Length: 369
Length: 108
Image 1 (cartoon, one colour):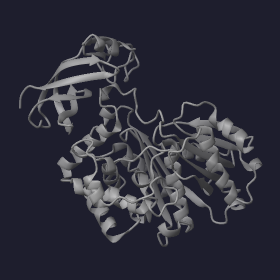
Image 2 (cartoon, chains in turn cyan, purple; image 1 turned 90 degrees about the vertical axis):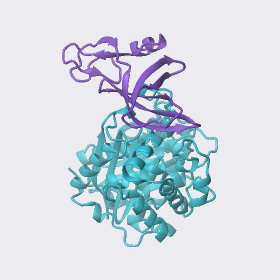
Image 3 (cartoon, chains in turn yellow, green; image 1 turned 135 degrees about the vertical axis):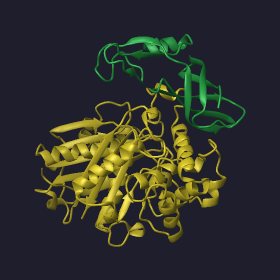
Image 4 (spheres, chains in turn purple, brown; image 1 turned 60 degrees about the horizontal axis):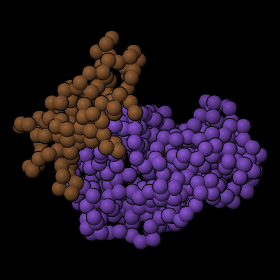
């Protein structure tokens, strides 16, 4: 299996501006080409698009609009972790030798049909994601004594981090007090505990070890990948205080990368709701069981950006098909030392965690310099 | 609309059971998720257990389990705070622009 590296990236600011999905997709391809002076359309073998849009043939449309005639072009959809699923598909094409250079483009619109999984009859009338989030929260609170204050620290921290991210949807920060006082959606989920759907686009370029140096002097290597789907229906989660698919995916990713959670310098985790970051830290092995909230509070109080330096989903917005790619771009930039105000000194090993539909599936990647 | 939804529309709570491996198929499907054989539809027990709950706008909702396999989210009709492990009864079910389930607390 050939090594696969990340060699370029492009992003747009997350907004709620009116725009077509096709236009959104292409808008992050442009900055990717802008920063890769040695990249030509002819270099690209594969174009994959990540979105939950109902529009068809998007990878081919993006290719045509970008002047690319790839050998392989198709879309990847997996709700909120479409982005990392798309990257893993591109990785596989390159690692297997079927391709050398793959462009992965993700985008979503605010009114995405991927926001609610209508198929899941077991959710009854409680199909909106706030309900599974609320039940996860109830369970974690009962088992570990997690409090509403603990949840507010997640959101406040990520909003602080998001202020240093020029691509964030938000033009203001929200404090701990703002989160505590925000509108109650359920007894344990407030408005500012939620990530916000928005428009956005993110693109990333992968290349084989044989050609990667043509585009980037020091590529960032994808050294570990773990993916797990336990079900599609929320009610198949056996323990609502943890995310089984994340634990399994993390274990596989660390095994493939031959490293441990202790070696992670920076982590992008899927904070769809505040409780998700606390649970993810525990399931990824970045915190002991029941200690996720304590870690978050320490990060908040010390101003550490180690977890979700980009601002996470809560602090930047959540355009579903672009999210996993934007997370991976942050990990890439951190390792390249290109994160500006958000830079974590000496970051060499990064983790990306992206999940879907109440953690019924998860993707975890380990990136290294 | 599948069989489960059609029955739900009539107020019936049904599940598919595999005649070969006795697997209760959940979520509902025409095929057994264990052996992929055809299922036989039958009425499902309405006696369940509360797995988890929360509240929105003063109304309790939660996840209940039936026959040790079927888990659904529904509204819990109770003035008092429910308790995990509490016995529930599926009092009403229906289909009104989507599935709806109503639970009654029946004991401690």
